[in-house]
Length: 377
Ligand code: SF4
Image 1 (cartoon, rainbow, N blue to C red):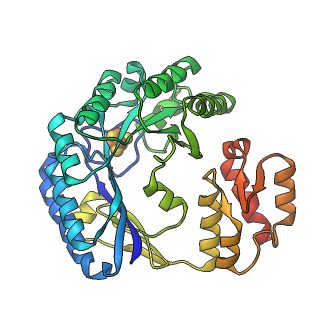
Image 2: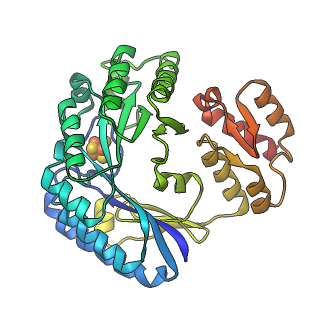
């Protein structure tokens, strides 16, 4: 049986956060039922094509999958299990917004087999949460973790954000300390990306919000790496930290270029050497659009993706596997770039893996471009 990961997108939110450009729709409560029925239809339609597969991870992301009645998620999981067998130890994650959780919802999710909860905490500073347009408070995040434990969740993750307009290093420190104090198993720490077209982009453009300088952003990232390591969270990807054994297996599949099927609006897939995605818009999905922009990947595409994704992880790029997959040593054609990057302290090679140093990770895109550039010259 070949391993498969499943991503299920739930594109509804109570309101839109100021920085958000994800496929998420507030005010569409009237479409919830219709959406899940379309999603269940998509799952049923995939079932005959999943023979011989076994689900090793499933991830309900959004949007806010905990916004509606948890029975929707439970029914979706039941349908998925009918479509494809799940490994007994499958990791099943549900993202949740602390402002939408109740003990009842968490009990239903846990009872349905969800065994990992990923909470969008973002900050433990209420003024920053308000500026981001989040619907929850810092106290609600603490309460959500407590409720999750009571419902039987032994694997809880918090998403945090730094490089926010007006955020001081002291506030970032306090947020990290508060997250650690909650004793969660996993922490993701993302730098704010200001996406064009968002209210946040307009605020920055008008001068109403000022972003921190690059030096400050790097200092915040360094502080996260240092503080989380001190608290027992190993960094396993640029923005992800976990207690040993609690690394997110679903996300590791993405970085490893494992196979995954995305279901629901805006969900992306990598399956049998093809990338494709469902319509980005809710209406496009409800109108029946599926598997758009299918692209069969060439060896060059796969090689490029491998460099971009594997170098995000602290494990790094497996050099022996590269040679098996692409028929030539990774070094070939890259001798000059590798020497330059190693001299500069951006990369290191050790135990058959090439990885970015912490300094290299701060400039991940630039290092990757250099690794890719030499072979194109
Ligand atoms: S909760 Fe998440 S998906 Fe929803 S609007 Fe906020 S950032 Fe976007």
